Image 1 (cartoon, helix red, strand yellow):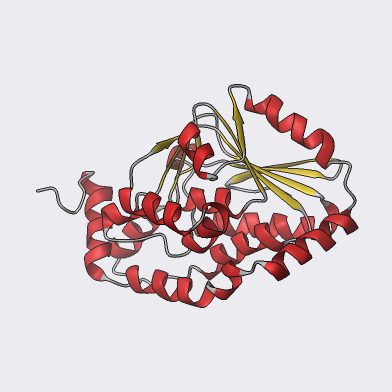
Image 2 (tube, rainbow, N blue to C red; image 1 turned 90 degrees about the vertical axis):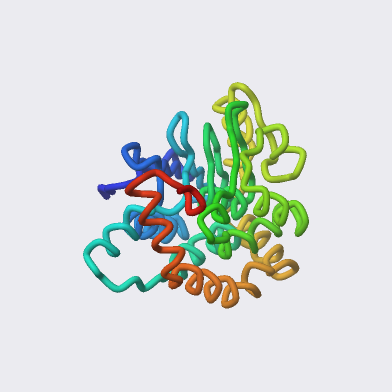
Length: 254
């Protein structure tokens, strides 16, 4: 099946899904989210492992502000709908397959959502991680439940409040990623050599069990979606996004 914003290939029961929007810094738009969801639906029956990858220097930079910009310029009503993306991350966490985020280069905002929702997060030594939302009057409402699941409340809180990029070593120390290496391709292959041996039944039972004993993302879904809709319905925030896209200036800059 041809896709517009992702590349997909299968190696037996392993699915490799690559974000591929090089002209947009691998940001997510509605089409890209829909395509990822389609692939995960296919993998329900056909895959035991799904590997999410980006480009050599950018994993994923979060949401595409240009979509918001286009709607504002055309006077189109903004109707934020974060639920498809939240459901996609829930599927990474609870679906009947092992999910791996393989991060090279920059991961920001919603890109961190994929890392936090994955069962395993690997990176190379050039990887950098950040949550930039508060710089624009926003906050990562939908990312935070998955981030708390992975690295705990206070580390998620600190990463959100500082908005500063952190190195791969810091991300490893905080538990955001599980392992890193200068040759992350080799690191990934080593993991897959063992993971590809597991049966679909065993993985499905294990994931179901883990979801039953820790289901914070499920419990916080309604609150996260409500908060996301609120911040993306605030015209002050939307005007700040518009200005950033057109002038490259943050809200506090003259």
